[in-house]
Image (tube, rainbow, N blue to C red; front, side):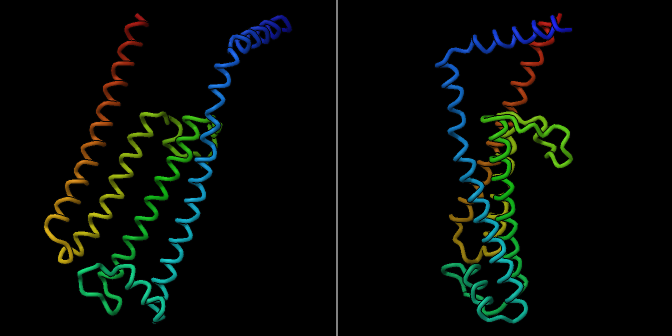
Length: 212
């Protein structure tokens, strides 16, 4: 047992010694990304604060608070359109869509922070944790790109829906431009997913061929 342990330790030590100082330094520079992810966490805090401010104003407006009502109307008012004077189903829908937009952007931030840190900085060792996100168990750069593209499509859909609700306030070129941008996002996500599938298929094929 001791001999095996010694041999394992010697192999580990030899493996560590094979890493050149310059290579180890370059590899260690991945920690330079840590402040970026911490900054995104601060941005997440800003979104949480913004969400609660909007939610409190919405509840206050429904309860008859005039200051909250003015804040809500200012948030949904569109330049060139008739400014609403009271809460209506459309006004509430626009505010709720804005809250959903904040949540989806927050989800995007979480995927970038956790997935990016796990992929490019250091393992978080969450295997077996009951709260581990399902997608994190098989995350890599390709999977992360597909999930980010999907999240961006969801955010774009919310903005496009808000435009359609206020379609009278926009000219035809603006609506067509936003629709075209959304389609570009959609096609880009499909292309990324298809490219990832091709690469995964080629890798599996090579591994199967090597095994034979």
